[in-house]
Length: 318
Image 1 (spheres, rainbow, N blue to C red):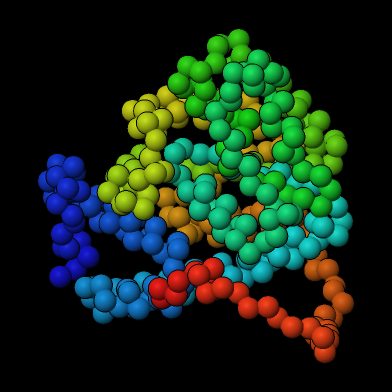
Image 2 (image 1 turned 180 degrees about the vertical axis):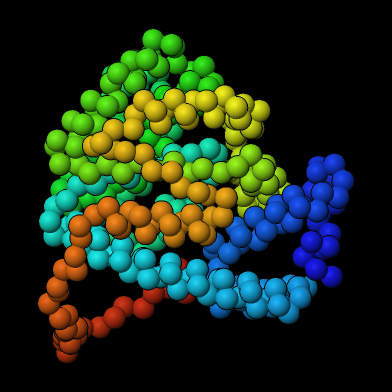
């Protein structure tokens, strides 16, 4: 039985309105990909061997995954070099991740920060503004999170909320919307003049791909928390979001902080392409380090380790 012939869970098949082979396969692949994100390559390859695929398809998937992990680890090694250079030179960097819900922003951020020092590379994902913040200058709540020298800040959504969700959902007035576009170019130019490098990425996915990813979230208990009422509402307003995105790109694409679009229907390719591009935008170089020698432990004759009561230990269930 091939992958496309394998039956989906009954509830998922019903929600799709019957056997829709192409979409069903895509939804199933998205669920599997979610598990891929959390598992080591060797474990996942063993699981893939058990899938009822043709021998040729098993080998193809195995080779694709090997290539993906090889490139990801290589790029993550370069990210460590970039981090060292940022600290050494006191460089300041902001990376903005925008895109539709389920476009893969979080997965890309996770792969960037996965092997880096959280004191150097911080992720900022602000909740909806509270009553006090709604009366502030719009950019005010973002300013405290901007980087100091030697820091990189990854914004998982940013001040561009006003150009997207706030505009589409009616959370801002027409006057506030227009004021945002008058202000944002000057705000970003001001940041650039202060020495902050700004990289802005829009993760672009198709209508069909977002539908598949939302369905995967609905039917995967490990992903259901990702699906909010706002996500469901955004699904109904696909065209309004498209129009808002087009206006945003047109009115905020400036030389000091241009927009870069990432083809994101394939999550793994999107991550590799985005990280590769980010690295190409920074003139980093490898910083030499002094060899590290582990010192010998100092022992004292009068040292005695006090016993710890057994009930204080975590039970060894595994």
